[in-house]
Image: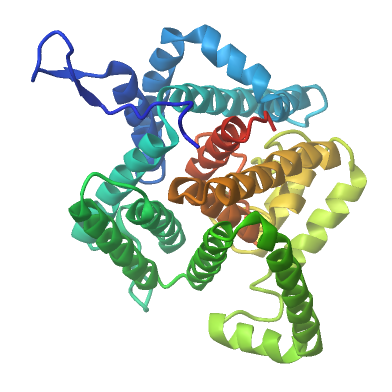
Length: 411
């Protein structure tokens, strides 16, 4: 259901000069902003600067439209505003204000990008940009550890695996979407296959399992959308019963399955210390349950609790560490109230993209569902979203906006 937004190519043909290529400035700025987001992990501040400059110019071109979107998609705005207001009770008010404003800037640019690009154009742009980063990663030949896991231009196997998995989702969606030629379908399908190989080369078991589960679930949802509404209820009922049966089987064989998982992934019974981290996070939440310590105000140099955890887990850089659970980690910082807003956004996005896919039966909506499902599944063991200048955060924001428009809802 994309009739409400016209696909906007970067280049169009001038009506007054037949055959003359004319640059679409707005679409070009949107693509540059997305390129900046993709390049943040390998490039850092220069990529952030590209994202902000292109995004700010895009916002200034249509400020009224951006404000209207902020009001229409109020759960996103409310979440960002809550993060900014946490400076009032934050242990580090300046940091909470700074990071909150950066998250607000990320959301504002996403509003501008989604206002300028259709869902299809958005997916095409990111597929090309991520494809270029995959090509650069293959040419760089970066590896790490004795296992020689690929890291590419990202310098981390997990970051590279996550980017490759995201690329697979975009490429696979475009392979199923209506394109101009069969050659385009072949290119997209080939790109998805190569992306899957790159995930394997990264040797990230977590990213691989998430990708497989996401693709299977998305394919099932697309298959379900093909059935008539009369049989839809019966299929949902059968699926629910099958899900309950699976839960019973898993519960009955939990010890054996746990042992298999640990042997396969090479983890120990604490999931490489995650259960210890979760215990600490739970204790911290009990101290300040409603509001937390302030947005991104825990992992700060000089904070005794953070310093102790860095020392315990051997994090010499004293950065890039978290509680490896989105709900616990963010509840420490913005409390249960903030987590409630985050859940409204994340699970609201999952529900809206699911409805969008079921109603349309189209490939592009399923891409946004798959992107959201990946985050939902990974949120129990990682902190994938709700950080400034993060690609996955921007993707969830975009999915929320596009699905809200397509389903006629603001949430």
